[in-house]
Image (tube, rainbow, N blue to C red; front, side):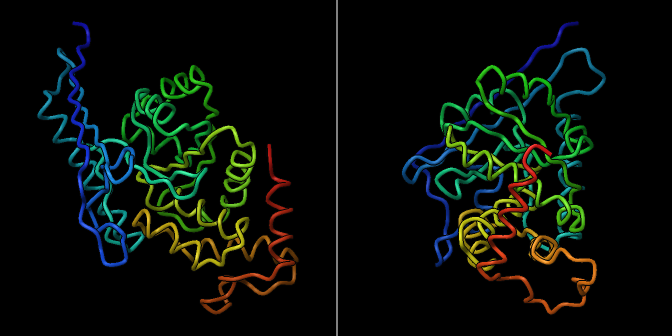
Length: 283
């Protein structure tokens, strides 16, 4: 029997979410929600898809998705040691970090690409997921990429292993290279995402702000996390910074350095990092 798609769309406008004293969202107040920001309002889209004639009922599928989310969030809390959660069932969520940079969770369907184009003027998408991440959540990436092409959005991939600081550290230079190139093109905003938008994607955005925007690591980190509460791995960003700034075979192992090492850099180090990152374009 053919497939029937059932969708539920809820829009919330002029909705106020609880804030901390510092102006940031409380945990779980927006995770899985804010699709777009207009003044002080946010909208949320929730969709459910069911197919008649398949072995699982809609309730069983929703239960399976709940199990996936629970497993994922347990792993994230254990590996990243932070309290944040990903709610796949509430759809794509994101926050704008700078004028040209948005950080968020994975687009789940072609309509999400339409939304990013029409509501946020996104011209580039930088996807940090591995194939296994996409398969785990059942995302039809081909249809997402097809819609990107139809809307003249450049889709780029720089896969890094989820919850793995070593993979993040080694992949940051090329990921930031792609991000910096897209921002410098100036054709529209860049949407950077991983799965939940809580680890890899914000780490890439923070590294970009650290290396290219004249901020130290703490300033870049606080700038992003005040807008999108999350817990990306600072040590991985410091490690990547060290790798780029100290490229000689006799350097001391990064693991032997104090915890504050390479949380800030000299002007000559920043210049060197910029040159090395920009040289990675197209590789």
